[in-house]
Amino acid sequence: MEVLEAWLSLRSVKGLSDGTICTLVRHFGGPKEVLSASSSELRHVAGLRASVMTSLRNAPDPSVVAHVRKEMRLIEKGASSIVTILDAAYPRRLAMIPDPPPVLYVRGTLPPADDHAVAIVGSRKATPAGALMTQEFSQSLAAMGFTIVSGLARGVDAAAHRGALTAKARTIAVVGCGVDRTYPPEHRQLRKDIEVNGAVVSELPLGSPPLPYHFPRRNRIISGLSLGVIVSEANQKSGALITARYALEQNREVFAIPGAVKNGKHQGAHSLIKQGAKLVEEAGDVVEELLLQLDGPFRDRVKNAGFQETAVPVFTAKEQRVLALVHDEPVSIDEVLTQAPFDRAEVMSLLLSLELRGCIQQVPGSCYIRSSGQG
Image (tube, rainbow, N blue to C red; front, side, top):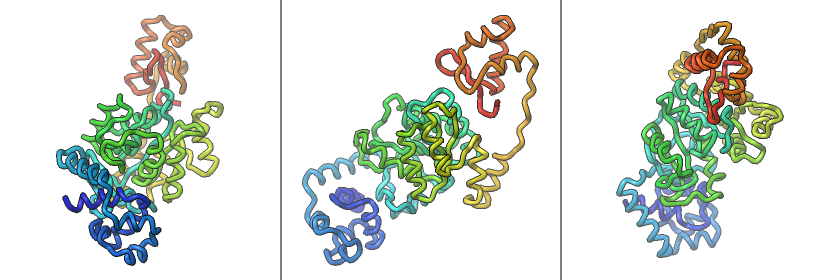
């Protein structure tokens, strides 16, 4: 526990950036060694400012000591596990970014299989079509073996996590608060499901509230864990674009799902496409771009899972008539009943048949939407 206390104390020193902490512990071999290093040694390794050097050399403030010890008690009680930049369990890809978090708080597990991860991010106010498209991308990629990374936020993030869970696959939620808190609060059960089937992680101390300035910074972790980032619905001011920018800085792939040109919810994704992001319409488009980055066995698995030919569904004439009335944007049941040239009972039966075959999906508001791949 002395080493853990040293980690938490080092992280609490004012003026030490994440990158500098990682440089120091890698050079000296651990946090205790950093805290006991001489001023000349510290200056030689990291070129620290005098004020930071003073903070390192002085005894920590009593409030810092109290907070560190409180955290240690919570960790001992199982509130979280800790993975540090020096641990073998620390995510390999995340360790490669310029400023990895020195300490990760983890609820769940982070196995080596998570090296094959894809992030999916987007609007917190996703449309039913956007949420459905996101979930289908996530489910398809997860079924191939990819871990799905997102931020547990409302909208696209939640759909991404649920897609992976539907595929009974792994998903990681990177949160902008302590891992012992849930934000948004309505995602409490979703978070619990993620802990069982993956991990909830944060760089923030236990008990940290979901403050606005926490979220942009945590986005570098979402991209850092991943081979690439998919941006679903996102307007020009979406935080998803911050994640995309981090991905580019970290030499990750950036993908964007297009949408209606005049729909403001897609302007962010369209802007990324103009700047060179790969336009993707299905999970196979993502896989095609990532194949060369995958190791041999996993590449073979993905090829077999992701590029199998699928049978073209055969519809009766009546099913075709009803299917033609359902589009990428929600259509109310009343509208379908009005336009279909059949009686109500038959239309409802046809809608049920199409829904069971995965061609359409019911969304809130007594509406239907066409599933992707049914264009």
